[in-house]
Image (cartoon, rainbow, N blue to C red; front, top):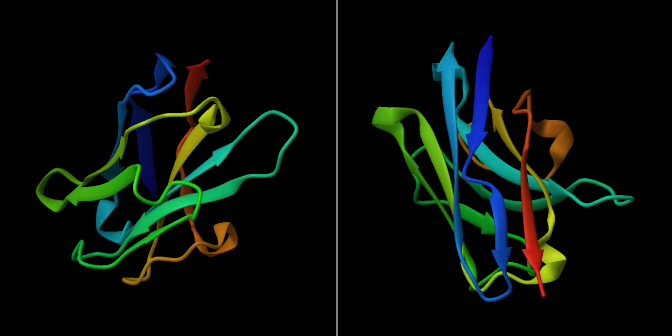
Amino acid sequence: QVQLVESGGGLVQAGGSLRLSCAASGRSFSAVARGWFRQAPGKDREFVAAIGLSGSTTNYADSVKGRFTISRDNAKNTVYLQMNNLKPEDTAVYYCAAMRRQLPSSTPDEYTYWGQGTQVTVSS
């Protein structure tokens, strides 16, 4: 099994920044491609960003392109999501996910492992 633990969420004003971290433990070699998703109250879970094993392949949702950056440190089994110029509509619970494939995906069903989530609240 793989355990994913998110950290770094919190309350920030619009225009501010946060950095989320997602550390993998257990059979972490199975956590190859990694992704971030978010879910706002009353809404479906939506894709935010994903990164492949080497870090050279990344995907972003149109709503966060140019503001969010996903990266990874394989030596630490950790993936990061740097969020800049945050907007109130970014408010959600952010989930880290991992899959056994090398190439990332924006489809939640393709991910095998999920973290518990971390709350991000952006005030206007």
